[in-house]
Image 1 (cartoon, rainbow, N blue to C red):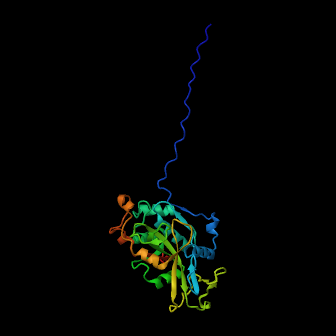
Image 2 (image 1 turned 180 degrees about the vertical axis):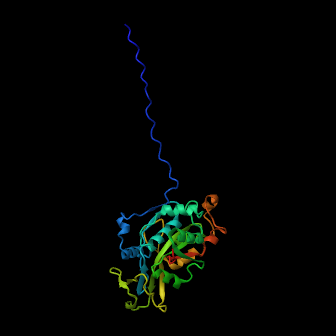
Image 3 (image 1 turned 135 degrees about the vertical axis):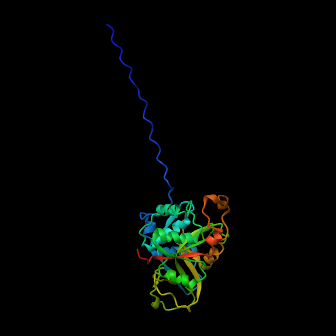
Length: 299
């Protein structure tokens, strides 16, 4: 007797591989130097100043006494043309006690408001608006640049930061390229050199343990007497392409800030991909700085 034929077995094809992860809506705006990086988190503020002076000033000019005042801020590194957003977030961190700022959120917020396409910020006025809206920080846009040195130093000596656009050289120090290398930095303090020996007791200065001619002024300290002649003036700064504290000549930063008049030719060729203010960067950045402080407004 013939056996009935068995039904053919159905051979299923192997399951398809899982789909690739969906691309994020926005690229990662900026990578932050995290608290796990001990070289940043645990930096002694005085040592940070010493290293910055050695790196940028090399040897202190022949002045009798040097006075440093700086408020330490955690470093951020930028990804893409987001130097302004990085500087803004470092300043916000400084004012908020280095409690952390989500840079990706700030980037998306700036995009949603129509302030930027790729993270670029070519308007000091727009930057000031973003400071207030994203961080509830009071800001003042000054259109006379760094000309009023006494006002600037008083602001910094109160422990308050400021944002300054400038042309960055190959080493990111201030230079004059007519705005074609425009970059943003957050200024957090200053270094003054005087040839006049003065009594430091009235200024609550602390002599540096290593550099005998260096004295540290605490934030919110009374500035040096107005009749003391300062031979040298430097600014302490940070920006999105280095974790190190910078020490730049005040006059170099001032001169760089007041000659921002033309776009980088590479950006000009792709101008539709960026948000440029009416009047270009001459109207948006030239000779402008932003002074920041904690908001005093009510809910």
